[in-house]
Length: 400
Ligand code: IMO
Ligand code: MG
Image 1 (tube, rainbow, N blue to C red):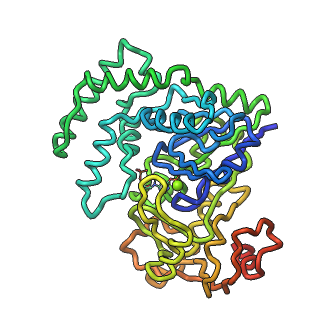
Image 2 (cartoon, rainbow, N blue to C red):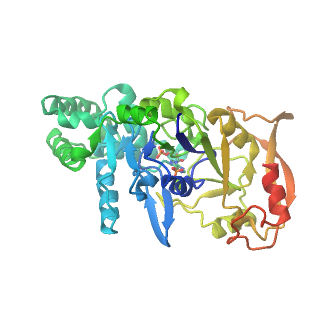
Image 3 (tube, helix red, strand yellow):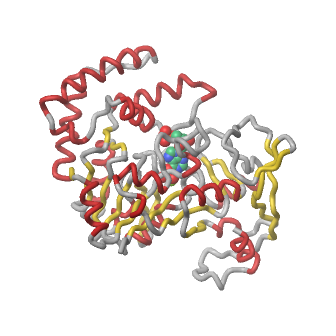
């Protein structure tokens, strides 16, 4: 019996994945991240205590689950250290956190490059989290990346660093940035090696064996389908595949072993950073939802853009991920709004689209086709069962 569970984002991130992962985390033996890095921002509140996790899987708060940062993740070891220390200070044991030796390292020059590239793009900036995610994946694909395992191979590491700096430094100079010496990067690499120590494992083998022996394994997604490098709103996307399919490549498990795929969506939509957002509410209602829902990025603190729920995008998310379950979060934020709209199609130059058109961008003249629902006045924040919801909230959910 294959006991795998997947939690993925179905919008542009920040759907509340961290919360759902925390709920499920106590029931599984392994929590595994498969892509992205510390661009994620997962807020989890345990007994009134707030935790914001970026790189560590949100499942880390459950001491009984082994937490694995999989091969497809890009790892900033300085951030790993910070997050581990923060948890330890609050009394959590972190001995159950491991990193696959295939994972690529985010190095200081990647962060410098991310910042420099964004600046150079001017009005075409992507609005990245400036954590070095894109440049690290670029180097991985270019085959000049440094992997966790390389830290333990003293003989070739210095050569690798020399090779990469021969590419990076001229580029950084061109962007008017400071350059890095090989001694400096090597010293940082040695610090990273010490921090990682015996947390380095072969995650691929461990996870596959765990699945084969019937253990419960949860794959924790970061980001979301609409930020997917291939299927998202390119180029305003992240540099990995945050979909259920991304698990196969990111951890090295067969698609046949990916079960119980759970997508998370807010009852409305948010987006941080630039890029097309058909249902965006640049008005009073949007501001209100943003305030009530406290929509500020957990990673960068930026104000999130707000919009109505978009079923064109959600249907696309359900298709690409092959969702078995859908979790709707933050519906309580929508209380006391007279009418609620849900997007069911787009009209572009007189043509109606019910399937997400991959080519649309911020300049496309999209008339969004909405279905309108009556809102509800009740404060539903403390309601814990579906039956206790106001009729209008049930109608809204049933429609989704
Ligand atoms: P969680 O896991 C929301 C966005 C950035 C930017 C684009 C590219 O909290 O859902 P990057 O730094 O990845 O190169 O930035 O992707 N982005 C997110 N938006 N939630 C996230 O993660 C995100 N991770 C990246 O804002 O628009
Ligand atoms: Mg987030």
